Length: 208
Image (cartoon, rainbow, N blue to C red; front, side):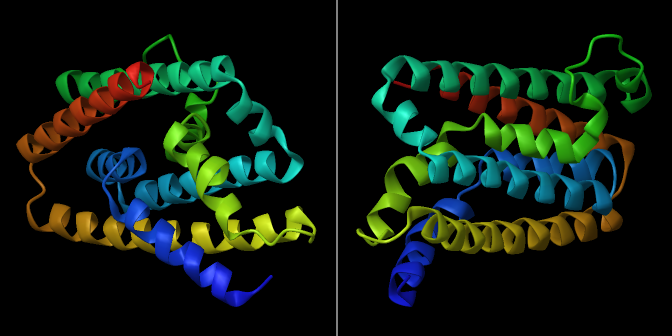
């Protein structure tokens, strides 16, 4: 694969990565409610979620989703519901305390994975992440050559950008938290993160 295509993909996907979204908000929430390591786990979970979309694209499943309006609608709806649930539980943790949240009886199957699982599923069910491999990546593929190696190279570049940005932001939030770590600050930031996640969820579930 020509390097100028990889660099073109990097130039196209970097602005999308830097726009605050679900992963950005989730990493912030994990650091505020937990620790720097929780934010790191959420960042790596988000990266693994991108691997799922890349794998789908490599085996042609993304083409099936893009050709089926119903499949894409289902993906958006599931992603929106998940984000709303994540935002609501984040708000609950701020109102009742982290201990009360960890004792709740109802959990999604991947809840025990913590920040990593939340980060991964937030991207697996994220139409924005899927669209990178449905619409953007194909513009940088060379016809007549095997698709899988090209998708792998683009995915590696994409994941590297995401990890650098999210790990940098994790350090920023962790440093700020150390400077102004008070119960009121934690509650306020957790509530803000929860509200943003719910908003993202509603937008995702209702987007056309």
